[in-house]
Length: 125
Image (cartoon, rainbow, N blue to C red; front, side, top):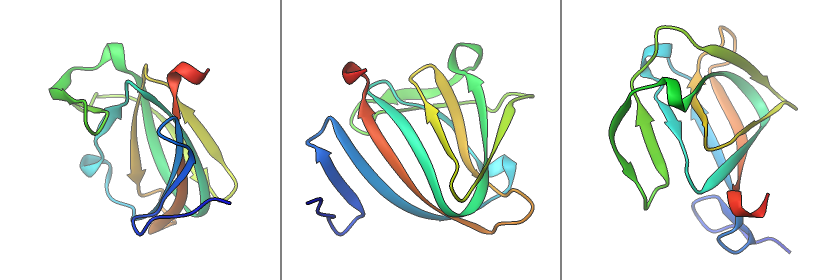
């Protein structure tokens, strides 16, 4: 049986696979930050509400700051153009280490999103 800690983390397979339950208010495009993860693949599943997630290849972006190994995150400067994924209840998206993504963008309808982010160690795939 999976157990959730107070912060919404579910250990599925130790540090190799775990889920993070998130509830966010959506924001304007300018407030969304592009990010990548080196260790984990993100499988993001929308349970209710919705958002837009901007996407670009990380190799085409300029890093902002150093990679944070503890949090497994690298942020990037916002590009002039990107592809947008519309996430609504029942939809999911998968982001590999090469996929820079900027979640939480207001989609014109939903003011919030309730989702699960399954973090999968890239060495498992």
